[in-house]
Length: 261
Length: 332
Ligand SMILES: Cc1cc2nc3c(=O)[nH]c(=O)nc-3n(C[C@H](O)[C@H](O)[C@H](O)COP(=O)(O)OP(=O)(O)OC[C@H]3O[C@@H](n4cnc5c(N)ncnc54)[C@H](O)[C@@H]3O)c2cc1C
Image 1: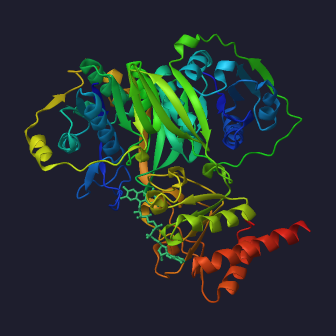
Image 2: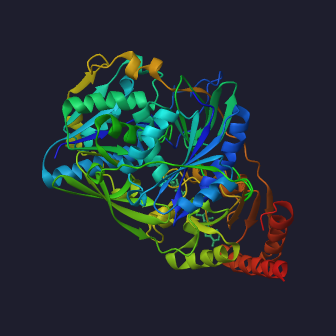
Image 3: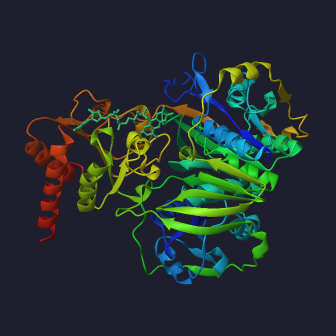
């Protein structure tokens, strides 16, 4: 089975964020970046499929030159090949533009299954996976916690409100994965050596046969106007003393002040 | 291009979900600003009756697609029904709830009809002739303001528990328009084999007004029963930080935070939770936060509305008892 995994290079969620003085963006200098957390689970799932059924694992990303690091980590974990879609025309593209570019690259390559993370931890959008499925004409299953493949089909568990849904989708499919699907492996030393040698295929929009009007910033239907810090929460009242007294006071506050009881 | 605000109604056990009422309430005020109507789009099986309910909660028009093939959400079947209506009617704005099926459907619909889409919306505003939304990003360390551009439908996927539903008015009768459904079962490439209910005595987290949440401080799976008891008297849902999930004390769907759920309840009670940034990412939008922790230095206290410095094993049973007393006296 040939599997493609979409990956993204994102700010480390442990790192504090500085919003640029003009509010137009996030200060990226000095900000540590990582392979998107959910995509690690995506690469792991693809590697497990390859170990069971054979085939290849290809990692693909859309992003600036530094994003090649995310591809290298995927190869270091065990992926066979990497595609980097890098084009300044994609600056300002929205998620649909990114999905179009990915679909063009994946369509040209051909595969049985595409795996994406459930979302990326920078913008949280969860749009690229299903949009990619649409552009490829594939079936989809989102936020999958368990995946089993058989001939021409995939069985997926997904969490829905208060239940687990067991789905069967025909292949080819796009699957987005939840963190509980697996435990990602660490890159091995030989893997890291291989990642240094592996040639990354770099593609522009033109290489993919896409025009600016199809995937570039001008095609975007949404635009980020700016960022602000979230409203600061003030520390409220701290209660100390005997448990019974604190509890009485807490209930009084919740009833009379917060009015939630 | 119309000026109408559409709401994709979502059902659970044949009744509209709470999020549907929240969206209808928001749609009402947006439609009034835009000078358009509120249109509810309802897909399901045996849901004809519920149109009145959608009207009472704010819909001027209810479009109902009632078909056995729509009883369970599947991407293919729902898209096949929604796409032609959205393409011909061109709603100005479509509101979809950020639920498991809403997040599955909305991006794919946007790709199919070439709509702008923004997910995780926590505010939706009309600015002249445009729609602007606000959404938390970067583990809630920033709020992004996003504008829709261009012509054609806009899709906003809205977080639950942000907008209050309007009080129902049963004298409001909506215009009901049936949607004809011609689905080829062979074109539905997804089959729902089974829906296994998760045995849980309390409400789903994203719908609860009150959440009682436990962390590593709970020490073991058996102690979640202390939380469940408090949740029962409060009518609350039970959640957790990540360690109880990783240790297998509670299922994954309890987890709140960056890699878990985002919740926006009226009241969040954090018990034995230190307040790591990844946990705050999922709950710091709560209206009121209570922290119960024996360490006065725990970071959770810096965002708590009310902090209780103490041993949760002493505090929680007392709190349960005190709330029980209060409930009894207010009833009697
Ligand atoms: C990529 C990534 C993603 C993550 N995503 C999430 C996420 O989504 N959600 C999440 O929660 N975490 C997440 N984490 C983990 C997070 O960093 C913290 O490790 C976690 O939130 C800590 O959980 P805790 O507060 O329950 O445990 P601890 O930090 O160990 O805190 C336990 C607290 O309990 C208190 N306590 C102990 N005994 C008692 C008692 N008897 N009475 C009262 N108080 C007591 C202690 O004083 C302490 O403050 C993530 C981490 C990473 C790296």
